[in-house]
Image 1 (spheres, one colour):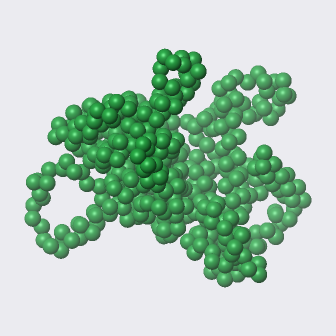
Image 2 (cartoon, rainbow, N blue to C red):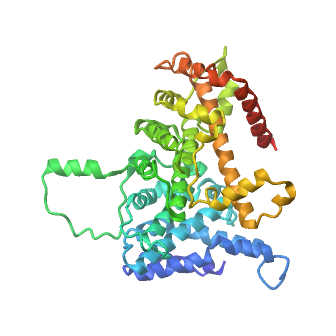
Length: 472
């Protein structure tokens, strides 16, 4: 509280505008230490042990929230976004500065999600504080999303330094984590802030030297350049990042985690109908089906993306189910998700999804060896669990149990996404759907494989197991 009371934060904000980038980065480094969410967790654990010697966990939580809120309200987010643009990754000290800014942004997002920034009002403005999240401010007042997409799109020229703390590979991974966190926030998914990904404004840095101007060019070519460069297509960036792994698995843990973050970010954006339209237009459904046909690691994330692309949000599903069903037909269906379902069938999605729906093991995408679920340890643990009795299962090491759990989680997510995709298809596809989509869907249920005794018994057990886990 003293940092706010004695206007230290105002001094920090002023120093973030300093023409010397080293000064600004020193301030960012201090703020990273002061606003680390882990400090609050440690205080909560020690709350009962050293009572009276240290500030209580509640007081510390309030002070951190006040510090963070004062920084945000003073324009700290805008200053951070401006500073990140004047740093060069090929300079070690400046690369460390980029990492610190991303860490600070992540800390502010975590504190906001935990409700810490809302417990700061002493003057009756708490309701106003609650109404504006850090994500909303970043989307409305800064070009941070555009910078993140630009960083993710940048190719890593040097992979040999991937283990360095501030290597380009690590910075790209960190940028994907922050981007995923922002896009999964309800303020963006519910369209309370931000625009669709295909038309983000181009990132510009306030510290750029405006005196240095390019050579004169003709008006026509100038207009062409402006029209091309003034927008950032985030949807295209995400799809291109995934397309790299449509045939091959990621080779390192960093690559694997980056791919998972990209899938999470893309899936979250599809809760907005305007993004679904662009996803379908950019042949995103075809790309996801290609990943599934190859049965590579990206197939697991592709199923999740397809689930979001054809299903929409759970809230819209429940509302329409309760209010928009008349004479057996759904009225007022979301056109974007209906078109996505029709495109899915037209692109041959039924041939891909039905083997998964019938629980055929050969159709399940395989997790990469560099992932925990696809490691040899996970395979051995699952094999031992399947062939040994309960006493032998207890002999598995903690690492083996963790790997086996990751494998089971992977398979459960595949199963869940497949069921939701099938539900969306049966919900949105009707007799008016083009390309005989309705007939093609119904035919799949009466094919020889589907009406066999083997399928009926296995399918019934498959559904019972799923719904048992769902309601436990």
